[in-house]
Length: 295
Image (cartoon, rainbow, N blue to C red; front, side, top):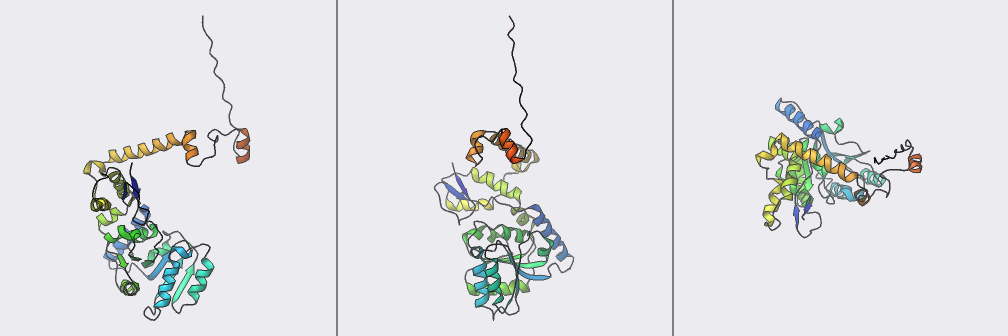
């Protein structure tokens, strides 16, 4: 049995491999296609500058971001950053942002696919506490430039030209300045595909079959290796979906597996009292079958 680790930011375990088996919602890829089309037609695809979105707690990168902005206010003069998120540290983040001479605006959290975010060109994410940052993948899928720290959680994203990695504070400043003055590179079909759930599923299937004694370099290349052609057929995909549905239904119908995943014991078939507590219709009494022996 092997353990699949989404990134090197997770604990190293025996017989484990690193493979990003996470994809983005197709709507983010569609947004990216629309932006690419606008750029091809000579239109202005992005009308806003930089932003960050994430749960508003200090550990999610807000402290690192505000520290960098505070330290280099003079070099980043004119920069405007919008922060979106909700969380227990919202008030403190807002107060810290107000003390800066830079224009840092704090807003409540929103869905990342909200049309409001379509116009931003640069996504800044200094967080180093994620395993694989979903919002970074979504921003890349939407065709934005992403600025993030050189950290194991961002290893998968280094293959994308719009991902700008900084190793120190000076590089952060340089990359931020250049990103605001440049246009994002258009994603190729292959790059766009790598962000999809379809590609993530294929990576998962391949990772599950990897020889555990394979060299480390081969294991790390799994995020970029394509599946054999026969696995791309519609029949194969349908079989995978059918198997997944069957497995889910089979396991959720067993008392042992339900309890293992946190279900309350003896709730597979709720009794009359439990139905009353949950506001459900009372259970129908099953009629007992009677067999008559024929002599």
